[in-house]
Length: 269
Image 1 (tube, rainbow, N blue to C red):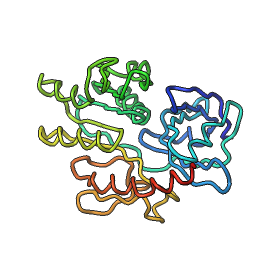
Image 2 (spheres, rainbow, N blue to C red):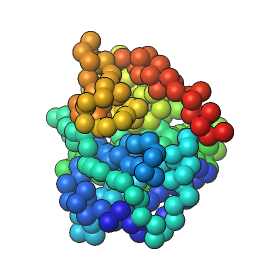
Image 3 (tube, helix red, strand yellow):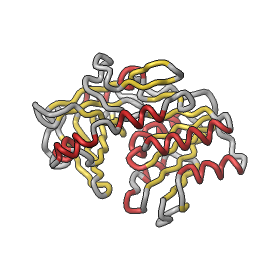
Image 4 (spheres, rainbow, N blue to C red):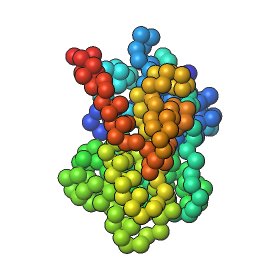
């Protein structure tokens, strides 16, 4: 259990594990996540389930090396076992009514948006996917996203591949061209999701975003992942991770995510 069946380095500091976890694979749904610890005295970190194979009993995890725990996790190799892994946690994403969906992934957010696009494609939605990164070198899951999309677009900040600009550059163009869009699902850095929400709000297009909040227990008891949605306090771990982007307090979420940056740097050093 929890043995790493395959390790793949997707991009600089970006790693994919396929993990033997049959009990989790059996119940996982798009939008859900796991929480793991790399050692007994380590912190608990949430990672979205990027894919799952019920027959093989495996789940796919993608993570970026940003702190001490992910740095330690990056040293795990094929054949190693993750000592502590629990899931699936969180609520599966409830896909809105409609036929035309746009799935947007920015940076590492491509990993959690992939199961959303895959599920929508299997349900018969017309799926338009947009993925973005700073440079071509940081793009990943291109073939996977293409395979579950009716239309597929790439944006890079420096123009090294696809459209030069942001994912919102492409989304704005699609809206201007009159492409039918019933709803948008966007996952990525907070500034990117906020920009998508600001754009779709103007055009009254329903939009969901998935949050990667700071978490401890993952059961709604600690309150560490609280977020304000429509003026009400919600908990990402049990009420989310997907929320209505037009009701979410993005500024509060950005402040909360930056609370421990100095401490994280201290621990790494």
